[in-house]
Length: 416
Image 1 (cartoon, rainbow, N blue to C red):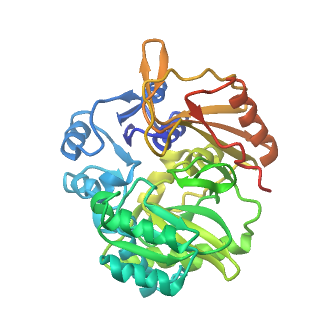
Image 2: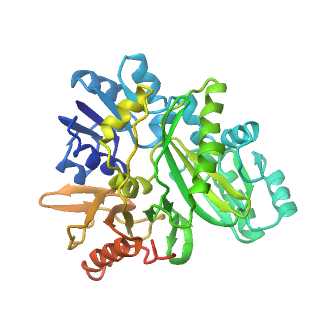
């Protein structure tokens, strides 16, 4: 099969690496891809938002299946366009992707279908929002309604921080149109985990759970980022909790989307908080998570393409997972998620047989790689225990010596 992967980040590189192991794949294309993907895929200079260009490419190269990584083209209707042209695509329609594209829609959806989540209110008026904050008190969570690359969430520890976040979103337009409407939520207490599933209409096939770390610095300090590291599976999440999450959250969501006339095909991602009252939804994504994908897919024993074909045909893919653990730590450009420098030569890491590198914001410049984004790459490792996998990752990162232009968290996978 000829496969097209849409996107340019670490999630897409991880998908490409998994596809490269498939006996059913003859050619992989990545649009636009990144420097690291070129080992396994032919990168084509088509932006992920150039839907017409992607459709034309899929036709000209006889693409058998397209897999979409990032959220923005989903919310622009890439799946709708491909389906109209009779092209196979593993991705939700624009209507189904609204579950991620609008936090206010997602909250109202969860309320309608009795899916456990935080108490909330939605605002476009700053005074009303501030009065709500003063009534509820802190800590409290302020979210931009639209897509903000994982950064449109402020967990305010004080009322002052919360009021400032309202001003930044509604007045300063920090997140442009994405913050024209804001959602204010109660601050859920507990440990976070993520559960992704392959979904086709009413059929839901959950993957293993992962834990992502959003804050930029150790001990969950600093601003929210797109994710600074992850590990899978999550030892403190019981099988009973996973069964409950599958039944009361993932299955209800898939059924609710059908009832809404928005049947879902693709990867449904639930970002969850394990509270004293059980798991509650923090957010939904309508695609593979990043960086969770980079630690979940390496543990998948099945042929990924066969899984997608089975799911799209309404067949149980019979998911099988390695009895191992995987840890991944993101190397980020100094200054991220704020301003940072690009075109910095990447450090050299000594990578053992048990470890791997996933490229995200990189480009090839002659014989070397340079940075081309905030989250530059992920160093990952698999082993029999979480502790061993984590140790291997940090040994590889330490092998590069002092890093003046980059940074990474030192505590990923070390909490248990």
